Length: 405
Image (cartoon, rainbow, N blue to C red; front, top):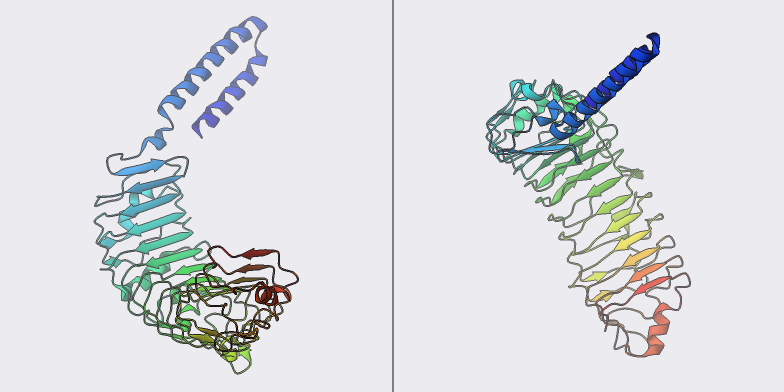
């Protein structure tokens, strides 16, 4: 930035040379060029004076990534002017307040990350000077008083804040009004990964009018209560690695409680049974991921209500022993991942394995399937049965049978 300033100064100076006689003009011009080159050399060697503000013993500064990371401190030092991301990990900040940010109040910090700093409280005025903040992450702060954090949201710039991540803080419960100060904000993404939440009431998300992605991975969630407002704009919901036994109710009579939901991830949960009504009111759902659950069987037409479903994943379902004849009944499905299940498709009797699946109908009702993954399953011994399984898949372009015996 300083090089540009000097360049403008030199150009203005050179322009003024045309007002003097030719001889003096040539002398001053040569002198000006030499001075400019000297300044350029100094800046290239020593850098921008503001850029040198990197406390290298405790901080790592990257101009390429526009990022500064600091550790083992009790205060926030001056940082390079180019820094847009500030990561603060393994420091000693028991109280986050306005004074803590005094050395960076002039920086345009867009991303602020706290991790394992022994934070206990955050004051209501903490983020007042961080006018450009778009993303805030507070992780592994197990001493943080969740009941008091809500007031600090008053100091965030609601028109800019886009992403909030509260991960690994050992939170057991979300106060119902925790996000009320952010009512009307432009937040689009919320992450609560790695906490100890057992119950989630989506009413907590009511203040957000534009949130599209909600992540609640690696908690202890058993129950999800979906109200009429909380998920009205959510498009992507990830509930991986919880203890969910049944699909949450997304319906209020015939009205969808998540009308824009496109991606639902329920990998690594405790799901045992699915029914057709399990996915009722999810008309826009395009991707459903159900890996690593506890299914022993899958009934007929369980995915029929998902009229826009494009991708279905049921991988590593090692307890699965039977598939009903029309379990995969979906005219919209384009990609089916049924891999690493060890499912037995062979040993058919008269063309039908009555106890496990129907060789003639298993994939019959997938007219638009393009991609099928059957990695690490057991396929029929006879080519006749093999042909009967796949003959109805007229649009199939990709078939993955890696390690399928």
